[in-house]
Length: 128
Image (cartoon, rainbow, N blue to C red; front, side, top):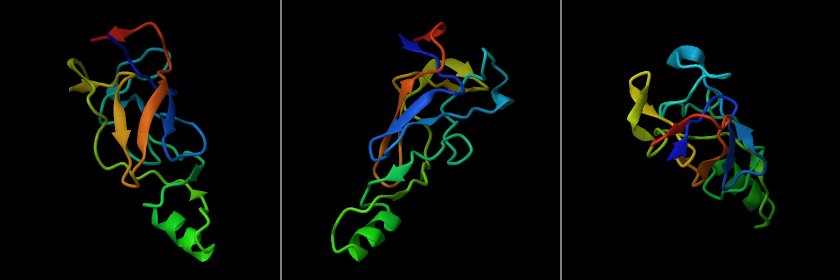
């Protein structure tokens, strides 16, 4: 059993320097102290906030800065590039007609990072 994720959940990217939080708009219409999330809450700068500095060489800004520094890794500001929903979600529990987001779901960034949930934002709602 997983734990349902809500707005304010803490996220971490494998190439990010700092944690971030998940922003969930009340459009899902399922509320605890914050709105519950579904797998479609993956939009950069709307749902997924930056993770401080990015250290992925797949990020063009990092690659350019590193090349300018003669090969010394030079992190640049993080701009998440998430283009697909969270996976796998919880297909037996629907929120706004989409699978609910649970604490074991992962999100891939185009720059190669894996975004995971480090704290779901609440601890009372368990989902399969």
